[in-house]
Length: 244
Image (cartoon, rainbow, N blue to C red; front, side, top):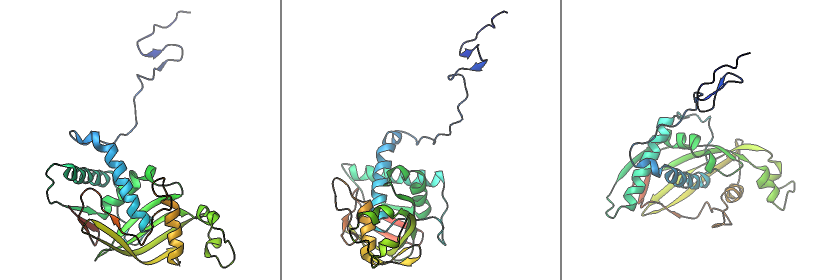
C-alpha cells in the first residue's frame, strides 16, 4: 500500500486538515477604530464598575419589564465609545464642557453583553429603566440564599427566612446627581413582586457590593462621587444626559 502524499498542514493519517488549516467560525467583535482599541479593556472595566455601583445602589435590572429595551452589539459598542470619550476628556490637560446622551438601550445592551463578568456571583440579568425627572426602575435576579445565610436571626418574624434561591429584586427611586456628587432616594423595593422594607434591600445591596476597599458594602443612603469629571447626570424618559 502506497502512503498518500502529505501536504503542508494536513494530517495524512486521518485526512483531516491541521488546526492551522481549519476555518475559524468564531465571531469576534469588530474592533473600534484607531488607538481606542487599546483602551477597550480598561474602559470596559471602568464602565462596568461604575455601572455596577449605580446598579447595586438601585438594586439592578431584570428583563421582562413593560418597557423592555432592545439588546444589541451595536448599542453596547456605542456606550463604550461614549465612555472612552468621557474618560479621555477627563484625563485631558484641557478638559472641556461636554454633554453626552446615554440611552436606555445602550446601557442595558452593555450590561447584558459586556458587564456579566464584572457582576458579583449571585447577581444576574441586570436591567435599568429610565423614567422622567430623575426616576429609575432597576431590577435583577439575585441569589438570596447567600444573604439569608449570613443573617443571625432566621426566626419566623424575619422576612428573609422565607426567601430562597434566585429571585427578582427591584427598586424604584430618584437619582439626584449634581456638583460632582450623586445620591439615590429610594421610593420602594420588591422581591418577587412583594414589597420589602428598606432595611432588607440594604442588606442585599451591602452583601453583593462588599470589597477589600469597602468591607461593609454600599450604603444606599450615602452620596457617592461621580467619576471621570462628571458634574451632573439628568435622567429623562429612556435616556440620561451626562454633563462634564
